[in-house]
Length: 426
Ligand code: MN
Ligand code: MN
Image 1 (cartoon, rainbow, N blue to C red):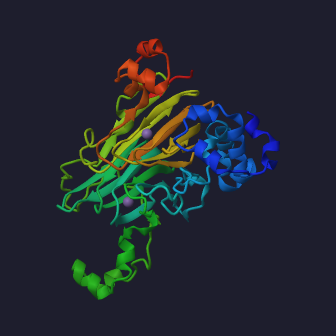
Image 2 (image 1 turned 180 degrees about the horizontal axis):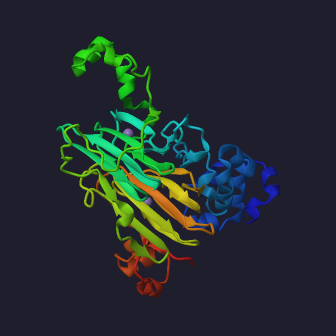
């Protein structure tokens, strides 16, 4: 459109009261659009593309400039005092950070510190070599949901009612530890174990967990001796400071929780085999979801695993009851988040990225690459809810859709194909 031509940036920014009135909600969109000179001047009032470029991150500049042609009456209106803030970044390149690196493992995290919008959920990508111990610890602020990407590991957990469980995990398996439950993770080999952890609190840092050695190293040995009922000399070599990830012996697959070999007695298992679940097949991919319905202990979180074929679209939807945190395992995607009030933001996302969609925000994902896109997702509710735009349109009178969306009623009546979570390449 002519709005985007360079000459516009030199147009004097004449913003008169009459123009403001024309751009106000009292003037219909049609009136604004029917006045080409108006939108051009409004765009110029912002200083054109140069000013937009200074205000907005690069990834959305082009989109904003393109949108200015048909929405500039509102976008460039300096008289609107309560204009909403631009949408923040919904993507953080988690795997490209250094994180915490140990001889036998590593951890990289995404919290509100790395991605400020992500108030409701945080995540970690962790790697453990065979035998490596993510030491005995608990979390004061969050429950922990995990998905094993590659390799094998073993967890132990101990609950407030004195019950314990040991589990062995492989690719596609999920665990869940309620907030405050004691646990550990250990690489079982062969090879590295890589898993993604999701926590139901964006302010939670994996680096701020309550670790066994952190506490014992801060406690006088006479207290430790009295506490455990053994001689003080036993603690002569207790690590000084927090171990976090340290070397250990490869655990036995049939390890038991207690010296007496008693059976594990946790009444509700902490393990769920998500990839063993039959997926919901869709024309453009698959979805697996594990909520507290399928995995009762997972009372505070739901997890999902999506595959999107090249050209496929995870269709437009939102989640009424939960924020969503995602980790991209493979592929090249385009995540678009709709934030109301004329705001939309698109992020180019690839393997190793973390993303976040606030509760209720509309979103969709396009696979724009040549390989399958695989996504791990976590929600901060034990009950899964979503509303899809296409399914919604199929549940209203065609006349209403016709009037609201401006499509021919005949077409509205014919839109009878079932709504799908993932659409195939158009
Ligand atoms: Mn943990
Ligand atoms: Mn979603």
